[in-house]
Length: 270
Image (tube, rainbow, N blue to C red; front, side, top):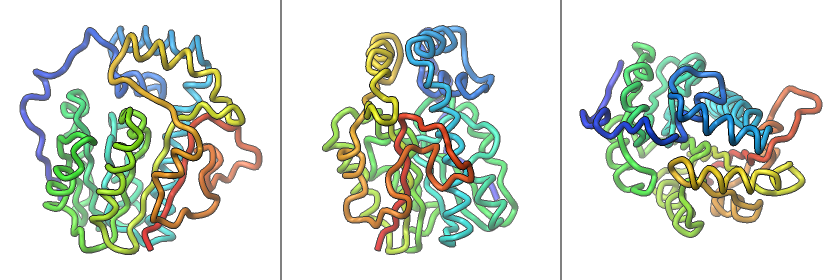
């Protein structure tokens, strides 16, 4: 079953003269949904901070492992994917519905190019539901209200917030957003998130200059956070093993994964 709520103004909001995160990220992971300006800024950032392409790929791989874990081992059948970005292979609904075809997934994004590709996302199983809503992470009440049209918010939901809170520049506001969403969900719900960091033990010190360049030449502006700040997003939740780690090292089968400066973690609501 497919559902969608994509407003028609997406194309009108599309600006191809300024690099945009969703398109640059798509370029870094080998996608085709980007423009020359995205490739130029992406190449410049990658020249300043070569690890960024590894970060992008590791973040995407974390998504796959986290969704499979939540569906297979935690029995989650509802997913709220906030800041989903552009569709590529193995999107949240494909992974979840491969495990449980009846899974219900709501994607949330406010990027117009993602809006234009929403129909690509809406190709789930007949038994399940895959929906897209155009909403901003800064408005969690609107997200919850509209997601409630597809998800049963009285039953456990896995909230996916991968690489999205770094665009909420005020840490207190970012914390309020996470807590507002998780507070509205029942026991047994989960939060999975990734977030860039400057922590030197993960190789993050080198991306300070690259982020400064990004903020001057692309949109939306971005920030990195330390371990304590990212850990704070899980307040009131039970952080599951192996805790908050480089997203490349989270529940991986690799013996010695190359660490990237992007934290990843999954927590359960008690």
